[in-house]
Length: 293
Image (cartoon, rainbow, N blue to C red; front, side):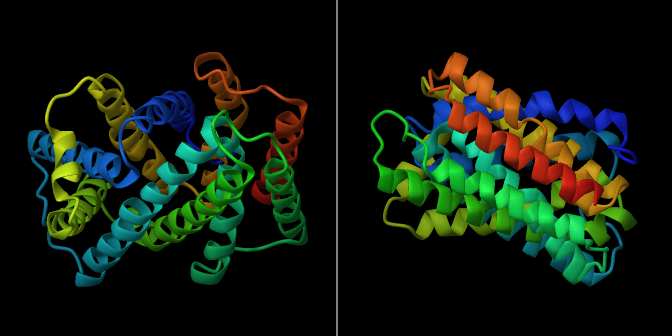
């Protein structure tokens, strides 16, 4: 990966475990409820670490830094993670991992437009190859209990999730580069929860949404998924964006695609087909072209 610090490669195993656990959590919890739980619990964990290290939650920073962290959190966590869970619930962890490969092209495009990072012909060709992999995925056999329509709708939600996630992290990158990683991550997550909480309270299904904070059987999946995916992996993922170019850092998230396909087959009993491998191969080849182009 070149300029990416080797510490952040650890994010791969964290992400894989979190995705499998989130898939199991989604069997009993709605996407918004699960996202509310993840953001709430991870916010508490991050604030605890911030207090323990003596860093302030509201340091003397330009108002624009706070603005972009709030916008990045709402779009990249409240919106994107809900779309992600909607996709995961419909298509399963294996197909979702292939759709997630759209993240790198989206990051490169938004970094080109907003951060003036370079965009080469090889990167453009790589984006086409990634999209070809996703198109092949759309022809795959839907997961058990799902229809072809569920598969296509799930892929649409996944594409929207990656687009909003990429846009959010590119918005946040200048703030990450110029400030404390722990502070930026914590404030972004707390601001997101401050946005989601009133929405959940005002919704007619508020009892259902807030019920996830009462101890229940599926916490055995939800709690470790939250700690791994919305606390540990979140810090490592934003650290990757802080210490290298946005386009290069994107590959950290994508090389776990094959591992998620294997784990989804072993633990979730999802079909392990040649079409999925072909789609994953195209998607990863496209990611390499995008990243090193």
